[in-house]
Amino acid sequence: MRFHSGGPFRIPNQTTDQPTLPRSRSRSRIASSTPAFRSAMAAAAAAATATLAAPPRRMHKGSRARRGIGHVRCAVASDAAEAPAAPGARLSADCVVVGGGISGLCTAQALATKHGVSDVLVTEARPRPGGNITTVERPLEGYLWEEGPNSFQPSDSVLTMAVDSGLKDDLVFGDPNAPRFVLWEGKLRPVPSKPVDLPFFDLMSIPGKLRAGLGALGIRPPPPVCPLPVLHC
Image 1: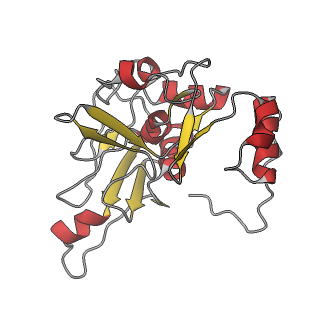
Image 2 (image 1 turned 90 degrees about the vertical axis):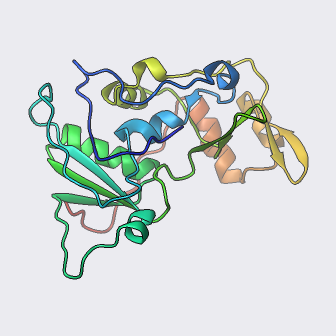
């Protein structure tokens, strides 16, 4: 997934807007590299843009913006180094999401599009948003490397988020029949393609194998109960 630099962004209006991210030019080369579809979809759920030279600014609503859809800003670590704030300067936001990985970006997208939060600020300690999801491209050497690895099953909630984010036409589904391997400690290890292969996969713990097997069968555990009060913005 590539993050294009620039200013803050507006969550797209799913009924009128086109996808705000450039379509991957390497789709044909990487289409079979995930068991479901490109993990970049989740990171782009908020269509995050890293502000590389200036502190985040408020993005004005476009003329086609649906009423009730908020703004999301993303501030990364390099901002403070390249454009330090003046002493005593304050930055306001209706809600702050700490961490610009998959969870943080998806949370920001949900706050802005589904919960009526008009101004969301995402902060990230790394120089870029996206967490583990990143693309390393070497055009002169002729290869593209997707770091992570991250992938997602095409569940209803994930597909809904992709559509809401304007990424419906950018989903890339993996070939379920294509073999997959994990390179670990100098050895290629085949990734289990069916639940009966899980016991022989030595890169997962026993609880992890059980969760993966149940998930492959469509059985999801109940969400954990949070013992602490949740602060609603």
